[in-house]
Image (cartoon, rainbow, N blue to C red):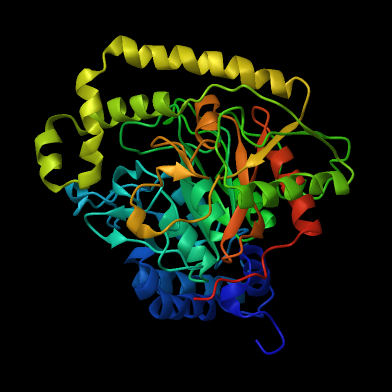
Length: 471
């Protein structure tokens, strides 16, 4: 690889191209990434289950296919990291819980099957918080995952293992899911591009109960093009998921570079209620108006959105307790202790309270919809803070000198899980402590393509991929 990019820092598309041209062998690629895992994972704890033997066998098959001139998939020979709440046939899948410590799925998750069919090679499973309930990555089974930009800090969650793996060069691409920010939070904290597609764009099956009306599956990558290619591979209906959407009818990757001039952007620094650290606010504001420098119309707007954080908590607590069901007493003995500081809420919530949350979601959508009657995209800070120290726990209780509630540090993520809209985290700068900052771009219903195109325009003007963490 003399004179070329080091394998572990190549994008998924660059790897696929080099493999198809015979410039790299899939075996060489897999070896490079597992060597990186051996070097770095003990410091980060991003991967918790490795499938090294099967990955090498698949790499050997992939190499033979290239030599034989067989038809190759778009991700042929490219390693991928899979979040540990996504079943992989024959590979331990735990949801970060001791209740599922020995669970071996008999079927692949829909997107895992699609990745395999596209030629991707599964490297293993990445760490999550138990049942993916919080925005950090720690559980009683595998412990804590650390941020490659500063190992004393969290990578975020719940797809923290996936983001830490990609950011540190242990995997070129990864997948996660996002029910309250779980793709966007760790992408922001780790300096990556993370796309939460529209609810139902990528099927969820088979999955544990819960999150049905909140969670979206999506890519975590270093480049927008990789995310677009992953969307082409993973998107599309599956009748086993009754909420899955019809086929998008367009290639995200093939249309990525199309001109999106004339699009209108609204920028809100706070949605009407969020508290943001001044340093973050300044970096994000500059990035948001960077779109104006590219010829787009950007207007700062004053919004009065509803703070859906408490409602989101009520819904998730109810769904989690219902999903655990008869194993609740067992879970209390082995579960993540901080959870039980708020799981008691379920004992005091009625069915009518749960339904009221759904009514409030409609009221929330009425306000959000008005923005998209005038604008194509909404820009916000991705998060109001940079990655915080692990010893803080599940999140800070103060931002910019003001007290905040449990969801006060994720005020920009939850609103768009409640509406189902697509949204992405775009790397847009660094704090004085050299911690990544993210800009959120929210699209209208079903408009992942528009988000990807706008993100690509930003990426070309303000590139981020060559900035690597110090680990």
